Length: 482
Image (tube, rainbow, N blue to C red; front, side, top):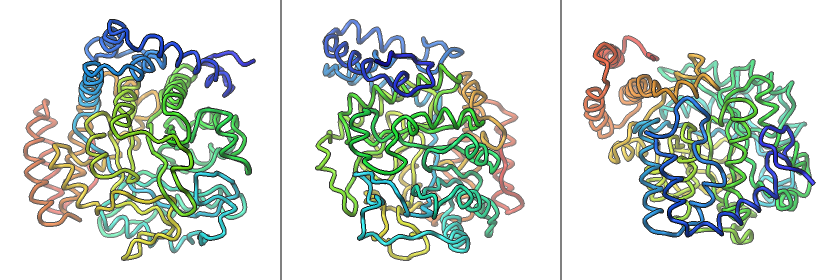
């Protein structure tokens, strides 16, 4: 029987089933111990937690105790602390991105995804490089600077060479004042050699969702195809790290298995990356199962209310304070608004989850991977973010300045991230206001920028940021960054 070992290279040891069961039993036994709960929260407080040690300030077992606790005061404190931590390390910035679906050809049999190989009803599409150019120009005309490219697993239709060529195409397109400055990649688990190719192609973050950490459930949900190999899939981030990709993204598809099991497994995975490579995940995504062609979420019978979803997001922020957190347009405007308060630092906007969806005036549904709940335009999302006190950001400076992996984590832990990211957010927002915003959004945005400029503590940096924004306004230059 596998034994729990946080540093082990083997999936069954760093995501150890018995450790998760023991953790859940411990949490059930101690969930009413309010003294213990208060001590865990005190440990996670940003003024107490050591900034130069590992990122996970509370363990997966401690987080499980808080998850199980149903005391209203404790639950309120979890959310309050999560918001405090988020503001301490990320400020009121929200980074924006869009997914770009390249192909829905897939050889896997995943039971929760409409792209599964046995679905004969869905039209199969793969974008040509010319079609990718058209999609990217449409995204640039919205104002996007950061994409997450997606493709099904199909060695014939979607080989690594296709992904690499697509990245090259995306980076090459300069349309008017538009440019995609960071391409994150969400493709199937692959080899160290192919991860090296992605690194050489200037990948941003390599993203791969686990779907479920329960191995028995995983194998049930993935009956056929390469993805059915649980260990190969779960150890993918290790291979990416070994290939030099030091920004990797985790995620669980909540609703496939009990949320308690999934949260513990997710935090154990984050702890493993920190212990084995000295770098926590760059991002953690929190998608939930949603309706799609051939997919009914009720079949999985593991749904949970929005209030618990908010608590899970808050606990991830408390447990992994330096990691970016992502919520997509799977969720409604109301759910996303709440999630932004408790730890989310990145959201998609104006998203389409179909292959070739951005060039269509009407949103196509026949090749969507999931229903989009938040169907607002990017401009509407940006306006809404500012109404709620956030700074919309298109910044990609850290990646392009080499502040990735352990360098980003050190930068974030020291608090220096706020001295760079705040002005960078204001300058990229200025680009959006000049080039793409509606009149109403632009008026609101310039008032927001004037307000936020005064919060930059360093006088020289504040003056330089203001001068750069004036250059953006006059059209003299773009792409300033600290």
